[in-house]
Image 1 (tube, rainbow, N blue to C red):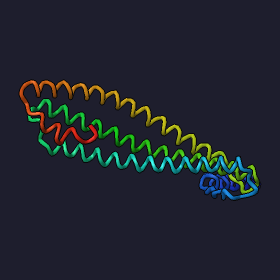
Image 2 (image 1 turned 90 degrees about the horizontal axis):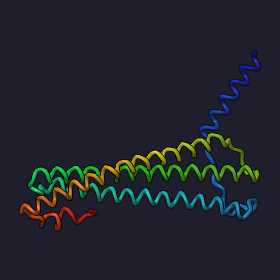
Image 3 (image 1 turned 180 degrees about the vertical axis):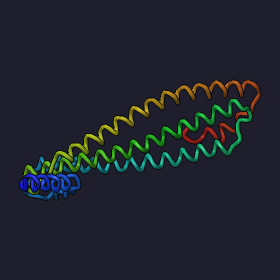
Image 4 (image 1 turned 45 degrees about the horizontal axis):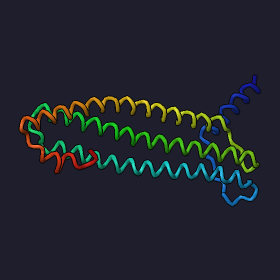
Length: 195
């Protein structure tokens, strides 16, 4: 009975350590690690760097889109209520998608980090540099991949909604301009930023 308690305590400690383990980077100059394995680790590092740059790009695009949405809200154009409502809905939908794309970029970054840690841990184990529990690292990667997949599906659904709202906007815009409404504001302010 005592040995069972000790075994259970040991399993809990090992499990907790595995979940909170930190994978140490492998120096790409490690001569113990073959060149192909070092390249594999370097590719995973590149993936993290590229994903981080995508997060930065998505953040800049989000800032631009927020500015565009504010410009639309502040412009008071068009004066026709139906056209204004259609433009506001379009603006809100575009901003929502760009926010979701930012979330996707962050999720891709998390996935790249999870892949890098798993590649590094596997390489370290294979070449007797360190020992790691791979199961939590694989689970983290699988969870990150599932999150990316879910976000992609959500964005695709929102893009279908955006297509409908875009059609509604252009129908309202056509009616507004054919009814004698001024379209100059659209071409000088509202429509000039990422439209």
